[in-house]
Image (cartoon, rainbow, N blue to C red; front, side, top):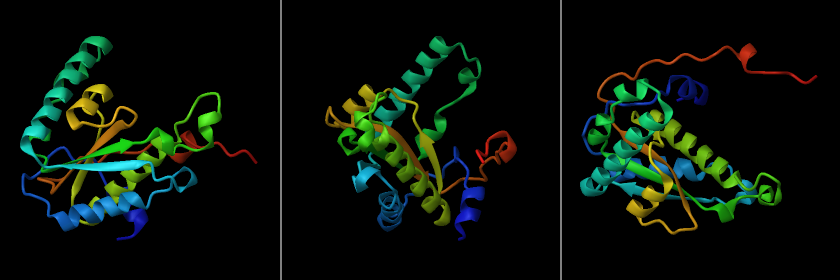
Length: 190
């Protein structure tokens, strides 16, 4: 699959078949993540593959708690209709854990070190593209509080759970989402 085609066609999936994903396929997706760029080649990511239903249920409960909190805090009415039921059928969740020690020179800059988060985001994007190329659906999921997820996953205090990559065979076609035209998003400094 052409990389440009993969970027254009990949969509977030919120309708998964409960069919399991084999370990070899999961590892191909994970390997794609490890090829992402990172500050000073620090590779500041760690991946936790979650297929255990009890663990997934704890994650779903935290996500629902976070959704309820966000409804109250934000006042965004659309969140009331945003259901998390699709999480119940996701066969694989991959937690992406970032290590702040793997940030770059930005750690000495005024706004602090976020290079490790950017590197983990690049790893997540690689994983999404690999999943799409392998015929899987995926979703970048962040509806959780980091301290709660750290506790659920038993992540070391100095590391940060940044996202979950939900992974599985799609149970239907994902919605097509448009993109704003380049001229609205690009400035040339010539």
